Image 1: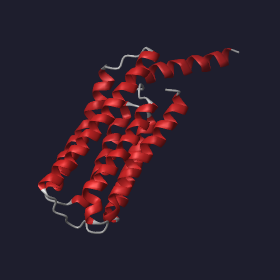
Image 2: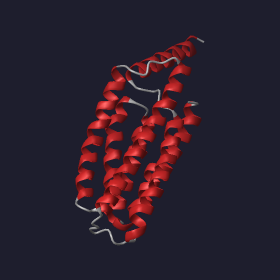
Image 3: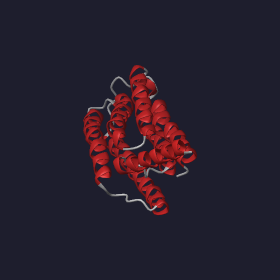
Image 4: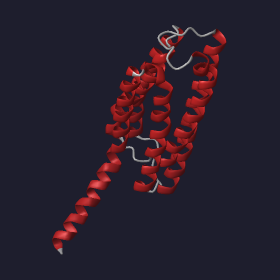
Length: 205
């Protein structure tokens, strides 16, 4: 009886330490919404750029200024909507669980997440300006995966697994250079939706 009580006490202590050392307020609905938004964004990117150049013609594709602006606009709008819905669903979860969304762990998480993301974003922008459209999808997957792995020590372990999958997809997409948009849809769309569903079921977020 006493041994069982000790085990329960240790479990409670471990849970309290986990809450104090990691950001655990991530919502599964955030992942699902981000995946759906990414698929919609990829559809419009296909219409504007990919459908006019063909799958295999990505060694170097010079875009017109109008195409470049439209593609950047789609990417920016997709990012803003995904982040916006992510914040919205996370805030809903925080209200339900009565947790603090902004603390030292959140700051560490964001710093470790955005350093690779911003670096990768600037690099991809320079590559895009030069017209190497086919490299954008693999590079965004790689940098996003690295960002998730880098930030995973401050949040749930599932984030690290998602990051590793994104990196693997990015490397495969680099080999199949003409099919980057398909891998982009899998990485940012399908994997996010699957990740969100797993989070919803496992953590009842």
